[in-house]
Amino acid sequence: MTSVTTTLQPRVAPRRRIRLSWSDLRGIIWQVLIVGAILGVIWYLVDNTNRNLTARRIATGFAFLDRVAGIPIGESLIDYDPSIHTYGRALFVGVLNTLRVSIIGIVLATVLGTLIGIGRLSTNWLLAKITAAYVEVMRDIPLLLHLLFWYTLLQQFPGPRLALHIGDSVFLSNRGIGVPIVQWHDAFSWMALACGLGCAVIGLLRRLARRRQEATGHRPLLWPLSVGLLIVVPGLVWFGLGAPFVVERPVLRGFNFQGGATLSPEFAALLIGLVIYTAAFIAEIVRSGIQAVPRGQWEASRALGLRRGAILRRIVLPQALRLIIPPMTSQYLNITKNSSLAVAIGYQDLVSIANTTLNQTGQAIEGIAYIMAVYLTISLSISLFMNYYNARSALTER
Image (tube, rainbow, N blue to C red):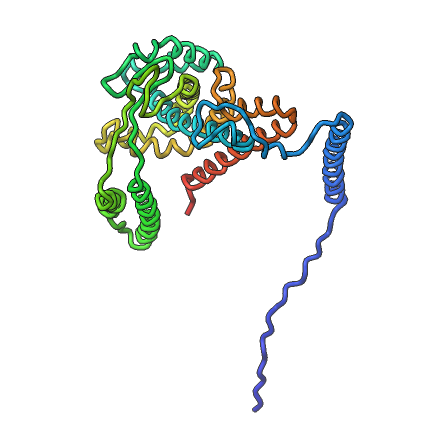
């Protein structure tokens, strides 16, 4: 008897031939033509602009950024001397001033808008009506009028010698708002580094705890370790470096206050106007997000004996957050772009300093291009961060 051994060969799938129909080919041709037309228009505009500038002997390029600016700037987060520093540094000061008011405005507007949005849904009749009136009034007044109103109001404060005061630490005058600050020490830098490392470790531990919960159904207790990494360890670092803590308060010397930190009337008016105006829109976003959560969530939570505050904080708001984040991104972008209205009240942000720069140098195209590039970069950064956060908080199907 003979045995026959057969070898099974793997079956090779036949190659699929890509066949383009006439409609597909026509679509590709149209796309190529449209892109070519757009590039041609851009090339014509750039070439025509360069020829006109050359014919009129107008300087082009960004070499002016290395020239001494001579622009006095009242508020700066970095060292700036108009007699020695360049236009590039002056414009960078403007970028920092824009980021300063935008970041603080986003945080304050989010907090205020969230509280007002929740207040509109309150069972307290008076609170609901007051918050509703706030929303209807504030969002119907143009932002520019908000800024002019608050700037005019802050200018009506008395001089430094007759300044209004809150205790012995906060002073209100027509020179600005003087507040106490804590003097920075190297120990605070090491504390911040310890907190950052603690946050990174906690993030890793939370991810491991989530995986263990999915595998075993039991989630390890992390809050004691979190308290140790975020409070105890930075506190030990602070004590180990001498526990420095010195509060510097504003003191009247001569014709103005010295020490502490002073918020200029221009910055304060811009910040208050942006926050109050944008908070009205954020309040409506929060209110609509909460109302979009099914009513059964409230009823089921009440059936479990939870109080209204706990239901809102632990059950409703986390679900509403997925609906709130996308429109909230637009409001954050609006705060950043609307800060350019600072030029109307004299706050030296990016637009104000860039306008002075292009008036002195005559290079308007480069100045406008610089402004557009900065605002585009900031806006795209905000959008990317919010889209990432929205993707992390979105529901995932299993």
